[in-house]
Length: 327
Length: 135
Length: 82
Image (tube, rainbow over all chains, first blue to last red):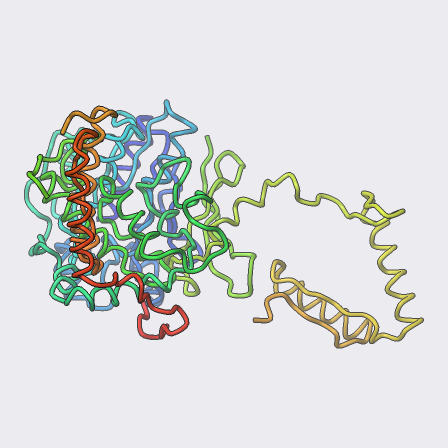
């Protein structure tokens, strides 16, 4: 998979269609975001292919040799055990959309390529709808997530509309993908869709209200108010954050007033949260924020019929919920 | 147009969380925690999340200050080092080496901290060394 | 509905209430503790009735769980390792 992504990025850069390709880079043994602006840097490109320190031992040659690429991705993952994800999409995800928003605010007329997963693309769609990015200035190169990551995320759609596929090797199909004419309708691997409500949500809902309250309060009380959930969130782009307003949230108080602090964020994210789960990953107190926002997404989908990012939802849609009777 | 991320270590405490500083056109604009770093695994505290803010802060000291006639005056490094050395020497001679204490910092490298304690113990002869990251 | 001084204000409010009720229920606060009703300035008696009924409902439910929040010091931090 990674060789295909490199080829596409190379073509895009060489053609001058994009100023830079925003993706992940592996350097000094760490994976981080990087804007590739020249073709020769692309050797360092990676798709987030290690899980913490576990895969450190495997050599770079092995990772880039392409020996595992001919097999379909899901088989590779299952068969190779510890060596999983070497050429495919790995677990290290970064808020690339957020970086893109930051860059394009400074360079609004430049066009950028970006590596997208399912969650990234949902984010892009919402950012387009909220006028934070110009769809004409973004070229998406999609990759699908491995099944184990999708299971972990309980992701409803761990793949973007179009993605680079292992099995398709002809140049023609890749060109088509760049042009955006081809739209894959088959899932990259089975099984794909998670049941709704997600297991984490359903498990909580089966509890008594009082137990559920205690469970959440025990989590919220650990909050160290690092604002990590907001800072990493690809959908948080407000210039002034009400969670940082001295009149609404008292300064110098830890934990912040819970559950108000966390619920306020959940409400603010209601029409934005695209369920990427970066907030949960970034939380030093391991608060299961994702579960809370998953529920918020379920409510949105019940109330308005749309889940943010899954279809093009305009800002006014939140104001068009079906009218209910007396309550 | 130049955007890059620079892998570095959080300067605030002794934990040593790995983070990326976002640099847009030679200006540090943001912080992203490093997901694969064994120390913090993609997490940061509120201080780490905001390390980029002090880099270009106009309040940062750019040269040594020495108190003269009750107020701080900007001086050259040579003057500052000479002044410090002479005062340290005077204090040691008059009150003994135990009258001097050293405060190390978590914001400098391990090697610099090593040098400081070596200086304190070998050159001055005191064990009075402390560190802000002595958690 | 629709007669709000702020034009669509009460529609927006209703959506928020619709969203908030299941959300607070999810964190274990009874959704009946949140109540909204649209009353015009000419319907004083209805407002009084509604508030009285709401207070009765709240009395029946007893004190809010928020009153007995967990003391942060009592939390066992080792239980929820990421």
